[in-house]
Length: 201
Ligand SMILES: C[S@@+](CC[C@H](N)C(=O)[O-])C[C@H]1O[C@@H](n2cnc3c(N)ncnc32)[C@H](O)[C@@H]1O
Image (cartoon, rainbow, N blue to C red; front, side, top):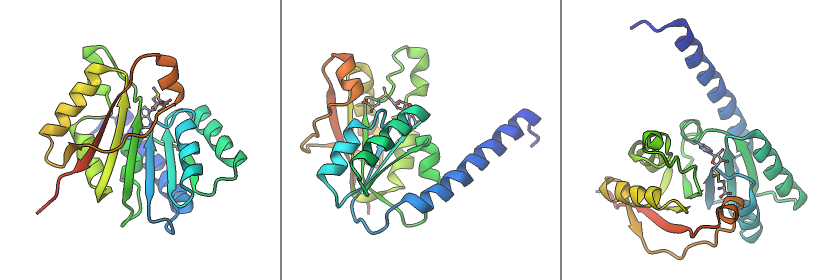
């Protein structure tokens, strides 16, 4: 198969980004914490900073695509001298590909992911079956995904996708209180769900 030179350049840039991300992860991931929380799309870092303060024994990593938000979040964690909380600029799908062998998340938090409300843009939504399969390979068997959104259509489609998925099921678990920047600006009611892996074997 032959690729155009621009596609080859794109693949090379993804490889370079992933190599850099793997090296960064080797430095920041705390292997001494048994409980490992990943927040995807951590935004301004409000949730994870107060969560890490509340649970100092848990290692917390927040990732986001926007450089300024990651910088602001790290400054919040540093002001509180939190040794268990770190933010990185990374795309979720790439981060999951770059984790060291044996690394498994205990918990994944996804609060107010970009809703992509127009039907023709739904393909950009993060929480879809292939991503749920990728997540299942990088979490502990009893791990939970906590998910909140104000977009009813997105919420319903995610719950349906989970119910149709071979790895995940919705469960009743005490929700966290999500007082994030986007939860506040939307002004709409949040819809919360928790998903757990189906027992294998
Ligand atoms: C609507 S904001 C919500 C931020 C935060 N969770 C809150 O509730 O305030 C969604 C965030 O997800 C980030 N994001 C979108 N797709 C992402 C991806 N594939 N990987 C990591 N972050 C992503 C965006 O950059 C944005 O900051």
